[in-house]
Length: 195
Image (cartoon, rainbow, N blue to C red; front, side):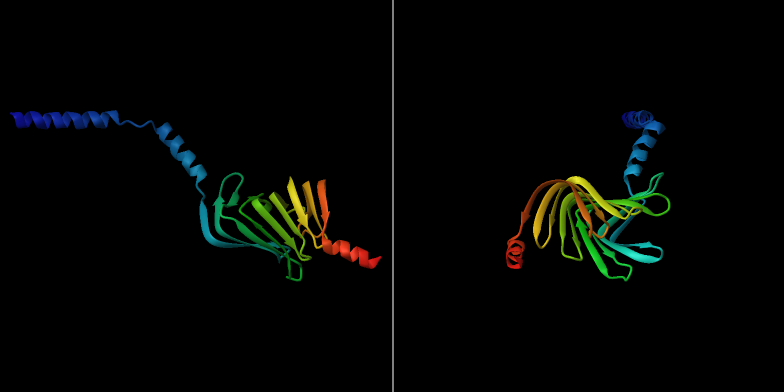
């Protein structure tokens, strides 16, 4: 009799626990739906991405990780940084860009723009160097720009400012709000010798 009572008690406890474990399907869907929105639909390690214009490769991007997110406005993230090389029409290296993070937006017809963030460095074919924390490249206008602090180092000078716009090859640039400028010793010595 005691054994039978023990079995009935265990049965009732099990039955009560199954009855009390009711899940609201709307709550479950909202939790899993939010998690799915944050997960990429594709993830690649050591990825290489080529950008072409009129069937000519204009840029090569390499990254340790590329995560692609689908949806109404697809985009991809480069959470572990990136290296980008821009090429001339003759396929010669023109400009190099590195950053700690990147994100690119697709307008449905291809890459529309990319943003580079965190220790962004751009070096052009002349050896001129741009340092900033945030830079945007517009694939349609072929321009790079930022409203953040910039430092540009050339062979003759160092210029600081807030904001900048340039051609994508960083050959022709304009600083929006120059904060300071220093001429290097070599440029001062060259000026003295030419006089």
